[in-house]
Image 1 (cartoon, rainbow, N blue to C red):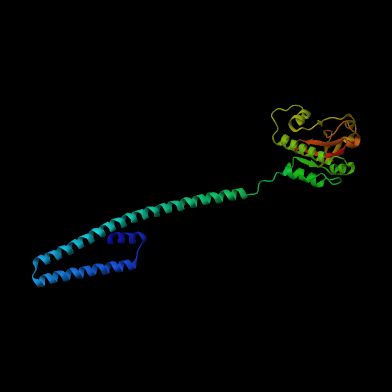
Image 2: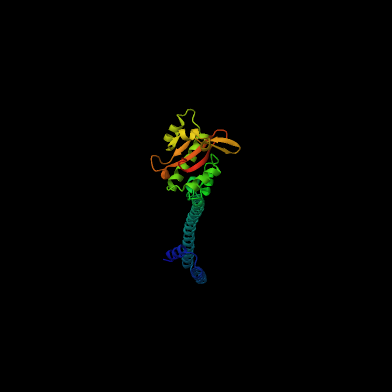
Length: 266
């Protein structure tokens, strides 16, 4: 029972009170054994002396056996704790690695998404096309330009469908970027290319404008520009609703130059 009690105490951890009691018990047993041996010798009783010595020897051997078992158990526990310590180190390293991955993922998600310049084009306000034109020039990276005449024509026309006109201007700006940045090796007729590739109804001729140089030609950046090509925003309707965008193809500057935005010129 005493051995079981010792093991139970060790299983719970160190206990100074139990250790003191155990040592006191062993010292008392040693004193009793010594007294029995002395008493047997005093009486000259060899048999009693031998019996007392044998009892003491058995007690010592049992003690040795007990402590050997405890030592083995403690060694096993030490190995177990070493293994647990190694596992703890491994788990800590893994936790650190996963935390880094998590933080990297959060950082990547917190990066502001790229802004689409085409989605930031402001409304084409009646009487003031400047902000819209500047935003289109920026979005197209210089592949489209607007003359002062384009601002005057929009201000004077008071076209009733500004949102539709803005959408057509965006398509025209994208078409210019497409044409001058990624020009295909072979192209169909220009009006067909505008229609199939960008959904624009573009005419490259107009008999009335063709005969009237004031309606056709405009000076911009020191050169005469032919603004005969035009987008038909609406057609076959009342003049006030018949929208037009006249532009010149500037092959040298690799851009479209818009000079009229509003109702039909005549």
